[in-house]
Amino acid sequence: MEKANVISEVCSNLMSGKRDKGEALLTKHYPFYGLEYAKRSYSKLQMLNILIRDGFIDRYSGQKLIFPPVLRVLSETYPNQFPYHPNWKVNECHPAYWDLSPTMDHIVPIVKGGENNSENLVSTSMLRNSAKSNFTLEELGWKLYEPGKFSEWDGMIHWFMEYVENHQELLTITIIKQWYMTVQMIYKKI
Image 1 (cartoon, rainbow, N blue to C red):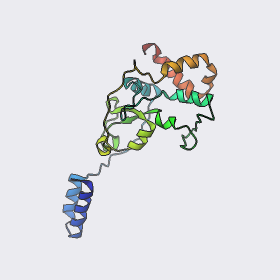
Image 2: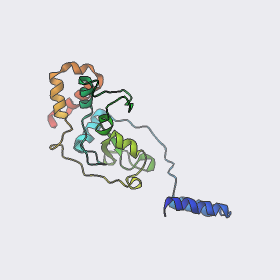
Image 3: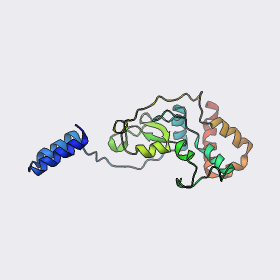
Image 4: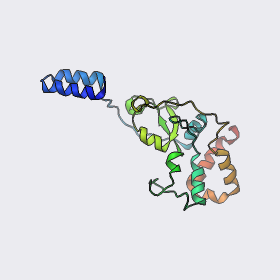
């Protein structure tokens, strides 16, 4: 039953004094998921493992993503052409931060009963993560794309490691150093 029709039916039942019938309609066709929200945070290593597993591909669009500190290196090198803002203000940072910077998202949102495990996590852009919010793929008419192959697209992680090796001054920037050290933990494996 279409959601607007459910609400229309509920209102008709309410107007007719059939409160219980409206309640039954809501419960069956448009239920409220009152699950407890818990803030989740992930280590850089957990995030890196998901990004590598997904081949640095946005699983909601199929588009390539860029390893996050690569964008920061560009902002440090080209501050006027590739600005960065610590809070990612849209009018003060380059759009690549929203378009290409990966984050993790729950395919089935936790608030809709999804599990907080790696099988329910995928890589996506900050833009799509923000747009998806707590909606399901079905609610948005989106689909889940197959993961990419890390051997074909590495999100520029190897470039990042080589560039930072040759420009150690970048390690004074906390986020670049954190990512660099995280990659070093698994670098020989990739």
